Length: 137
Image (cartoon, rainbow, N blue to C red):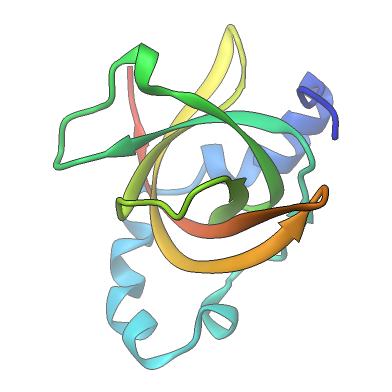
């Protein structure tokens, strides 16, 4: 897997996320209770085999810079992201830092599914999240 995604590829894959209205995830909460995650996906997933940074969120406080860790991503869409974790996440929300300096997009993601998988001959957890908010500077 590559360490980072180049800026052109990143901009193409994330253009819809950056322009997404903040309240669009909120309007889908009732629908999510009635439909499976696959059924409610409103945009196609794209392979996203690169390293990005995430940090667990506990409450509404944003994580400190040293709380972010590198994760290998599997895929991304304008509605969410899937990444590999060595341990089962102990939180329901993550701060996700997408891209490279100086063009980093900060998002809040909610865990919607966790599956045990094998990746590079290791037991890992595939964590699927939906984007629920964008963090503004």
